[in-house]
Amino acid sequence: MDAKQKLVVVGNGMAGIRTLEELLKLTPDLYEITVFGAEPYPNYNRILLSPVLTGEQSLRDIVLNDEDWYARHGIRLLLNRKVVGVDRARRTVLADDGSETPYDRLLLATGSNPFILPVPGRELDGVVAFRDIRDVNRMIEASARYRHAVVIGGGLLGLEAANGLAARGMDVAVVHLGEALLDRQLDSGAAAMLRRGLEARGLKFLLGRQTREILGGADGRVRALRFADGEEILADLVVMAVGVRPNTELAERCGLHVNRGVVVSDTLQTYDPRIYAVGECVSHRGTAYGLVAPLYEQAKVAANHLALHGISRYEGSVASTRLKVTGIDLFSAGDFAGGQQTESITLADTPGGVYKKLVIRDDRLVGACLYGDTADSTWYVRLIREGRRIGALRERLMHGEAAGEN
Image 1 (tube, helix red, strand yellow):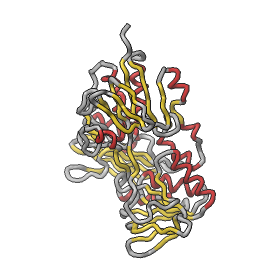
Image 2: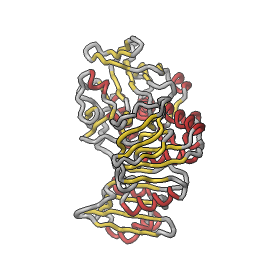
Image 3: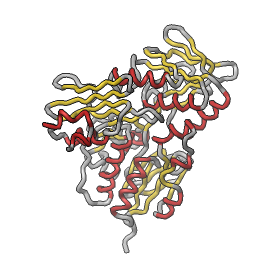
Image 4: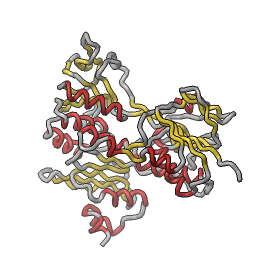
C-alpha cells in the first residue's frame, strides 16, 4: 500500500481549518495532515471575539474544533508553534523550535496582522490591537482596573471593541479620521442612525480627528492621546482598530509572488503549484477579503483541488458586512454607494429606526445597505450574486423576500 501524501497547513484559523473540513468530506484518507498554529488555542471563531469581550460568551463557547476533533481525524496539531521558513526545493517547513516537517502539498492560511499606527507611544503598555484571544484578555483585564478607553478606528472592529468595553463599565471614546462611522460600509444616512444608536449607549465619538501621539506616564503605561491639533484626551487603554494587512511574511521569505497578499489563481494555487493559500493572507484577482463568507468559499475550492477532483473555480465573492453589536442590526453588501449609471431606492423611517437603500444598475440589484431591519439580507445578497434581472420584482423589492417572490 502506498504511503499517504503529506499535507501541511500553516495557520490554525477559520480559513485553513474550514479547508480541512471540506477536504475530509471529499477524501478522508488521502493525506497525512499536520497543522501549525501560532496561538495556544485550537481553532476558534474569531468573528465572535466581540461577544467574548462583552461577556456574553466565553472562549469555550467560540471554539469551532476542539483538540479531540483533530485527534479523531488523525491530524497532528502543533500549537504555539510558528513556521518561520519554507524550503520549496526540499519541500519542508521549518518551525521556530528548529524542527522540520516535510510536505507534498502545503496550504498557507496565515491570516492578517493588525495595522498599528506609526505614532510615538504605540509601544506603551495599554496599547492593544483587537485581533485574537490574547488581545481580548488584555482588554478585559484593563476594564477591571481602569476607567478611560480610547478606540482608534470607527470601522466594524472599532465599534465592536468600543461597545464591549462600554459594556464592561469603561468610559469609551471612539476616534475616527473620517467624517462618518463605517464610511467604507455605510452611506451617510445609515451612518447617522448608527451613531445615534451607539451614543444612546453612552459611547462618545470624535470624528475627523487625527492621532499624533500616545502619551505615557512614568510607569510606562498609556495615560493620554494627543491629536494633530494639540488637544489631548485621557486614555488608560488604547485599542488600535484601523485595519489589517495580509500576513505575507512567510510567503515572501520563500520567494512566492506577493502583491497586497499571496497571489493565487482561481484554483487557490500560488505560483508554486504545490502550495495553496486561502483566507485573509490571499490576493485573488487583485482583491484581499477580510470577511468570513469569501474565506469559506475559497476553502471549498481549495479542498476540491487538494482532493484531486480539480473541477472547481473561485471567481471572487460579493463582500457583505454585519455589525456584531447586540441590539443593533446593520448590514451592507455589494456596491451600496451607487454612483453613475445606478439608481437608488431608499426607505428612511427615522422614528422607527429603520433605513434601507437598494442600488440598481442595468435592471440588476448591485448593492444593499440596511439598518434596523436586516431580515432580508440573505435574499438581497443572493440577488446580487446571481445578477439576474429584477424586472417586475422592482416594485416589491423594498418589501423583502416574502413580497418579492409572490
